[in-house]
Image (cartoon, rainbow, N blue to C red; front, top):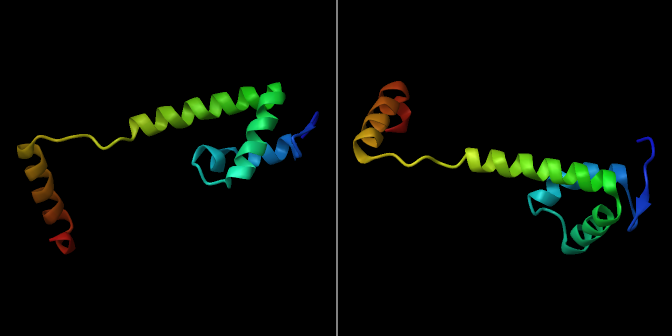
Length: 88
């Protein structure tokens, strides 16, 4: 990565490679703190991190399970049983 900086013991490329895992809460606490420190000190990584975080949160909000009223849920289950008999 051109213009890559080394901050908090991490290069920008390492931050970008681990950002998704960070947003999912899959990094160790120490690694997460290190990544946070780098992002606080690095404007390009902070900008990318904010954009990715906003996109992930928007997707998660849009993927929530919709609630169905009982008649609709019942029709849905019946249709699934017709389409996929092994579900019964």
